[in-house]
Structure formats: structure tokens, C-alpha cells
Length: 67
Image 1 (cartoon, rainbow, N blue to C red):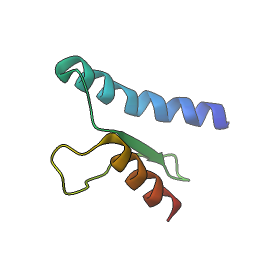
Image 2: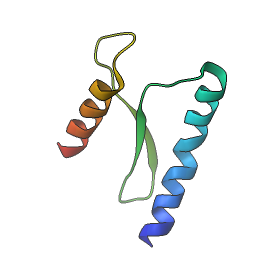
Image 3: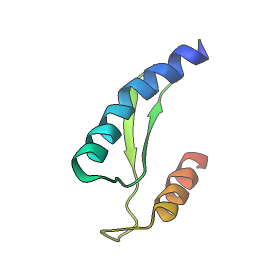
Image 4: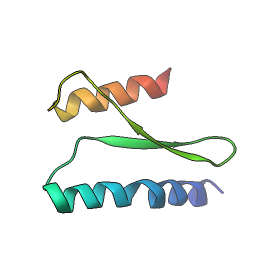
């Protein structure tokens, strides 16, 4: 079941990254979550900077998931 859930999550969030990469050549890291009910939500982080370093956004996302 976990493999199916992961595939569902990736299927939901990857198209956005592909679209942004195609249109802009780069993107700010983003993610998604799946609740115990199977609902998927997009997740993004805002550091207060319009053009943040990727590592800063990744750290922000990781920290938020830990909490």
C-alpha cells in the first residue's frame, strides 16, 4: 500500500514542477503531503525572500514536516 500512496503523491505533485521547469527553466523547491485520509495537499515554503536559495526552502520544508 505504501508504494501506491507514494506513486499517488508523486503523480499529484510532479506535474507542477515539470510545468514550471519547462516554462521558466528552474523552480523553487516545493513538496506535498498525504493525510491519513489519502487527501493530497501541495506544500511550499516562504522565507520572506522573493528569490531564496533552494537550501533555505528545503530546510524550511523539512523543519515544518518534523513539527
